[in-house]
Image (cartoon, rainbow, N blue to C red; front, side):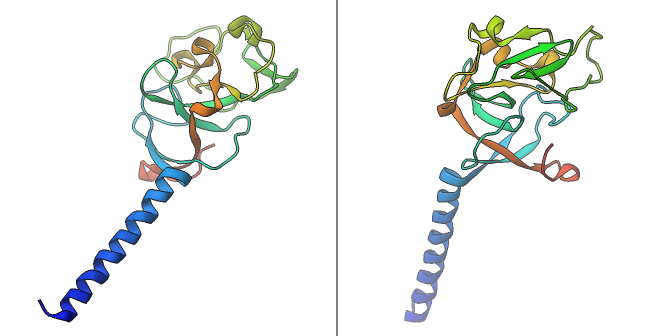
Length: 181
């Protein structure tokens, strides 16, 4: 090989190594692509949707998070309903956080669901978890498809250390690309 070919080859190897290092840093510390599994977030997300998750954003109420599931070796995507210090209760399909009623337009009947009196059963945080408020470094999460969601009603609070990140952008299917609501 001539010297110029060696230099060109070395330049390509360096460029590829630099690009891989940037991808590694972004993947480890900034964001990660994730696939939605199951129908617990219908109609917001469908099974096999692909999303981008931010690992550096702060978590606010009603944001969708990805976390290590406490009851399986997998991960879940759910909506944050309660942040530390919140009192949560559900009465007649109305969510109350710290005594204030909130509309939840993302919770609707999904075609094929059994017709029931309510989309979400009545509960208080005390009834479900034995605690009056969401503890420090923990979150109370619910799926948007309440009739089929395995969430904090069953497995309790999500610890902050188990959270991978916040869903920021849907990248697939292509006709639904954008910021999820």
